[in-house]
Length: 120
Image (cartoon, rainbow, N blue to C red; front, top):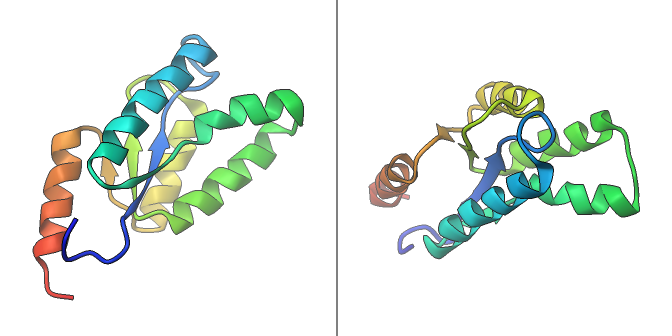
C-alpha cells in the first residue's frame, strides 16, 4: 500500500440477524475481513457485536449508534449480499457521509489503485 501512509479502514456491512443464521453471517463477515486485511486494509467488523451483546446486552439502537460512528470514521464500506435491516441503514449513512460503497473485491481494488495513484 505504497503512497497511502495510513491503511484505509473498511467497514463491513451485511446481515447479522435479519437473514440467515447469525453465527454463519459472522463467519462470512470474518472471511471477507480476512480478504480485506490481506489486501492491506484495516477491516471493521460490527458482526462481532454478536459476542459482545451476548455478554453485555444492549438495544439494537445502541449498536446502530456505534455503526454510524464507525462509518463516519471509516474510509469506505464493503457491503455483503443478503437482506439486512441494519445494513440498509448503514448504506444510507455511507452515502450521507460520502463514503464509497463496494460490493466486490475488484471494486475495492480499483478504488485503492485510484487512491494510491492520485497526488497527495
